[in-house]
Amino acid sequence: DVNESKIQNYNEISGHGIHVSVDGKEILAGNAKLMSKENIDFEEPKVTGTIVYVAVDRIFAGHIVISDKVKEDSANAIRMLKNLGIKKTIMLTGDVASVGKAVGRELGIDEVYTELLPHQKVEEIEKLDKQKLSKEKVIFVGDGINDTPVLARADVGIAMGGLGSDAAIEAADIVIMTDEPSKIPEAIKVAKRTRRIVWQNIVFALGIKSIFLIFGAFGIATMWEAVFSDVGVTLLAVLNAMRVLKTEKI
Image (cartoon, rainbow, N blue to C red; front, top):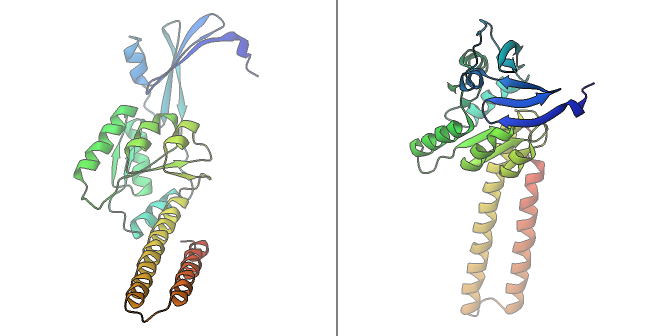
């Protein structure tokens, strides 16, 4: 167990790592950028994985290699997204190039940008926003606190709720309550189906009301017929909307 009473002055350095005092010793833990920023000499190991460099009292002490495990259905989620008409998939990550590109190849992602700070992710989203066509949307999926600005900047922000930070969930437009990437194309399918049903209801309701308005103006329809038609349109619209509840899984 960790004795938390020995931990003091904890400070998270966004995009770099942490600075903390443990039992009177100054601890720095983070990426290579943190070591360079603090002018600490360190050795870069030739391994694949996310490397956490550790310095004690500003002297390099060693490193920890963390190897991320790609979620089982991630590759399937990418394929389903492309089947739904998603033109381009891009990964924005703070991981080193070797890790990011390896994951990108494994999942079949079109473009991979690595070693990005939070504000650099926002810049990449803004570039995509300028390149897109008027009817196209930029969707960003994230779960960490560093993803909050990007989720807010994208046209549609999706937070993975199972392990997502509260800040990311607050900034997102859609929250996936499990950590299953395959739920993302399912959510898009539900959104498209819902949009179609909404437009069906709008066109149907306005069409029927316009017809009975004209009939009423010429004395063809009575007031009671107009009332019944209005109630009927409402009931049919509600029943049509309930079809969303029966959306089949992809």
